[in-house]
Image 1 (spheres, rainbow, N blue to C red):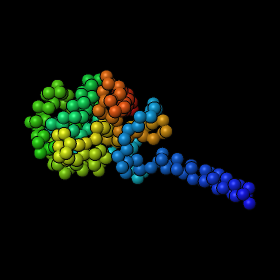
Image 2 (image 1 turned 180 degrees about the horizontal axis):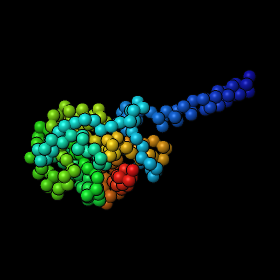
Image 3 (image 1 turned 60 degrees about the vertical axis):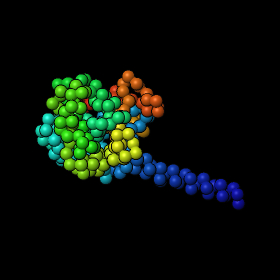
Image 4 (image 1 turned 90 degrees about the vertical axis):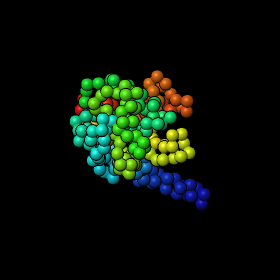
Length: 241
């Protein structure tokens, strides 16, 4: 009886492998990628053509928006048409990750100065971050590129943009330094407004690029690796498409 039981169990395991494993693999490759925010992988990353990010089978695209920039000018999603765009969320008085993120964006801006590359930095503290304060922040970081907009406006619209369109965490929290917390990741958008990223070694899009570790650091104290170098490569790929 034991012998036949083992045979039966083996048959069931084999059947599961034949029927269900391919379905699981296929689901991982074709799923709606970000019903939850997925963090960029530390796995080795491929150099294939960049993925389109999808949600329920639909390619995700930069949504419509209208905000004011550091020069008090109205900026909309249409201003980014025809440009490869890097997006982040920050706030002027951020004492932790924001300066690192802005410095990394400054590095990228210098590499692609004069090319069709733009930057959209949305404040998550619009009540304080007026255009005047955003201008001072931009000047402090020596930002003069007309295609780098520090954007402010209606708080609810900004948070909706972060949470429901870019799927990047942002929230008020009086218990953390600065009173706000947010994702330290960059989103990459192609010239047609579609969200893009490269794949990890398992064939899944990494979705976002880590923005809090510099090229010089290579690896942060917590073990996180820099991803500015791969973002730099992927911007070029999108420029060449």
